Amino acid sequence: MAALNLGRTGGAGGLLPLGLNLGNARSVLQGEAPGSVRFLAAALLALGVWAGVSLVTDQIGAAGTALAVQEGRWRTLSMLAAEYRVMAPAAGARTADGDVDVASVFAQVSERMGLGSRVNRISPDGRNQSVEINRLYAGELTELQKQLAARGVHFLSAEIRALPAGGERLFTVSAIIGPAGRSLRGEARR
Image 1: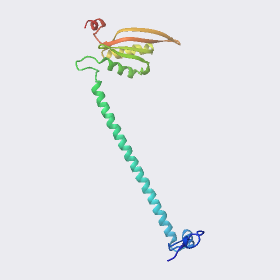
Image 2 (image 1 turned 60 degrees about the vertical axis):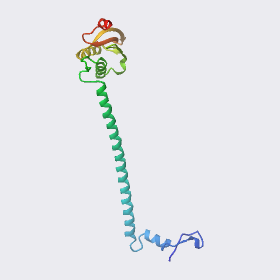
Image 3 (image 1 turned 90 degrees about the horizontal axis):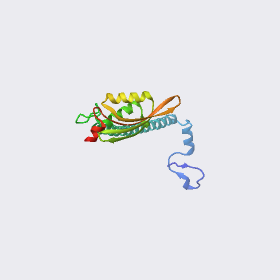
């Protein structure tokens, strides 16, 4: 049985029974031994196949994980959308008894007009809503009134303050809005 001498280990403890010595290994790596080029090519091919399989396996695992996360998000989104549809009927914003849902209409109109952070306050006031909107241009105030009226909601009472802003005026509106055909006096009597 041949032994591989690893050098400076000394004595018989430095010998491993592998059938090759360091000189033979060097000649195989340099391609001098017969069949060594084929051996090295096969070893490199095996290493490449192993690396490729590992990479593909990792990519498939990552794609599977991402797909599971996306499916979970889709289920959550679908569930929230169904809950939202039950809570706030958007088609015409009418309640079960045919009255206009003033809060939903105002939310839809303010979102569509991009009022966002300029809506300072919205709170219920019986069947009506009390709202405060800051920094409205005259055109926006007119458009707000038209959009609300088209959906069956009107200004029942309003306080409008004009603020100078450069060459134009900005308006701050504090109002009570409600369904058409209602008045504050009618609400007070009920």
